[in-house]
Amino acid sequence: MFERYTEKARRAIFFARYEASQFGSQVIDAEHLLLGLLREDKVLYRWIPETNAERLRRRVEQHSPPREQIPTSVDLPLSASSRVILKNAAAEADRLAHKHIGTEHLLLGLLDEENTFAAKLLRDRGADPAQIREHYACREDVSRPLSFQRGSYKDLGFRSLSKETVEIHGARWKVDYVRDVVNLCRSYNWHWHKAQWTPRDIAIERKTGRVSFDLSLANDPANFDLVKGGWKKDHCFVCRWELCQSDNAEHAVGYTNGHDWVCTECYTKFFERPDFFNSAYPEIT
Ligand SMILES: [Zn+2]
Image (tube, rainbow, N blue to C red; front, side):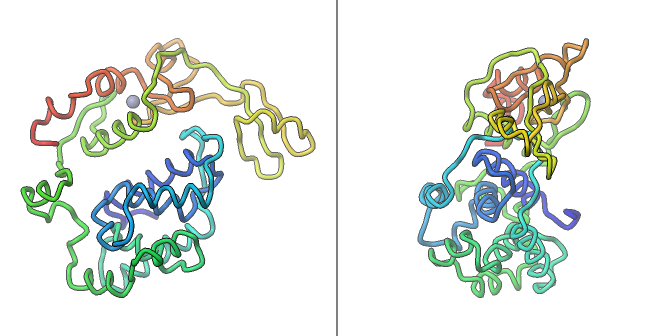
């Protein structure tokens, strides 16, 4: 489904999923796509002249107040609107004869789904789809940040992108991705402590099979089943390494903020050494 997506567009979806979990939403909705998109690609603010990151987020929070967070390891589906938005984004790319689907197409896809709060928010703040299309119509490569000259990209206050990779559990990961996710973890949840992973009790909605850690739901046994120790693993927020009950300490012990988990390797490499990215890769800011 995401083969045509640029790396930035993929990361925007990743961040949208994160936003949904932070808002305690059971689905990834249009406003989470919007927040994820703008978190990943701040250049897009140029198309929304009458706002900034803080004000926009406040409006979304007023519209749908955050509920109890859902761990990021829970898989959240896209809402019906979000699925339409992704279809719109592909259609926008086709229309512009672009092979890739980038963050600009996702922004247009959001605007096209006119009945969503996210689209209204964008339009009310000056986003004009016609203007955006016109801009990208003659610039096939504009969504690829590497086409920016490195110097000018930095001068604009945006980080440069690098092809460097870093090793985690023997696999290579893009430095950009790892740094972004680590920064995200740090900015949202600064307190992490070392812990032995243990199974958790969960409530499962009978009709849909959806899982919740809100055990008070089990007070409604007609609709929910309480499953003791039903949550059998988590994944490292950074590298997806499995944390579970195991004799192998690398799997059995990690760091947690109460919701999310990070494996020991990621924690010691990136969290305990806040200068990791700067010292290992001096060209990255
Ligand atoms: Zn990890």
